[in-house]
Length: 216
Image (cartoon, rainbow, N blue to C red; front, side, top):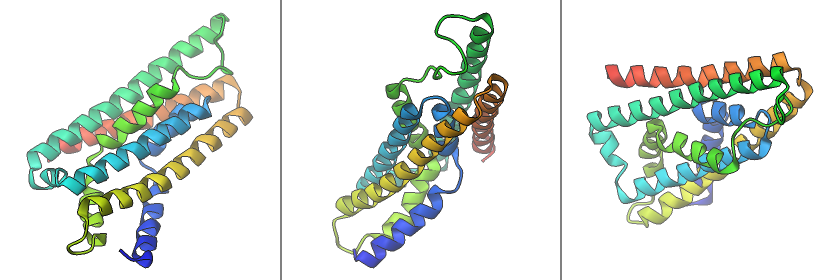
C-alpha cells in the first residue's frame, strides 16, 4: 500500500468522521459536564473501529454482507442499545434535575452526569461494535486498499488504526467543545434542555435503526 493510497483513505475517513452519527451524539451527551468521560467514550469508539477492522481481516465481517438475516438482527441490536442509552440518559437527567431542586448534597447542574470513564469507554465501544454500518464501511472500502497477495490481516489493522486515530481526534474535540459550551451556558434550565434533547436524539436514532431492521 502506497503513501498516496493511505492518504486518500485517511481523507475519506475524515469526511465520514465529521458527518454526525450515533457516536457523535453519544460523545456529546456524555461529555456535557465531564469532558474526560467524553474522551473515554471517543477512545471506546476508536477501539470498536479497530475491532471491526480485525473482523474484516479474518473474514468474519463478510458474514454480515452475505447473511441478510444476521445483518438485520445486528442492526436491531444496535438500535436497541442506542434506545437504551437515550432512555437511560433521559432518566438520569431527570433525577439530577430533581436532586438539584431539592438541594441534595452533591447534586446540581455544576456536577458531572453519572458516567464514569470506564462506563463511557464501554458505551463508546459497544456503540461502534453494534453499528453494522461501520462493518459495511470496512467491507466496501477497506478491501480496495489491500494489495493483491499482501498481508490482509496486517493491512486491515493498519487501516483500522487510521480510522481509529481520526475518529478519536474528532470525537475528543467534540467532547471538549461540548464541555466548554456547557460551562458558558450553565443555567440549569438550558443544561436540562440540552441534555434531554441529546438523549432524545440518541433514542430516536435507536428507534429508527430498529424500525429499519425490522422491515428489511
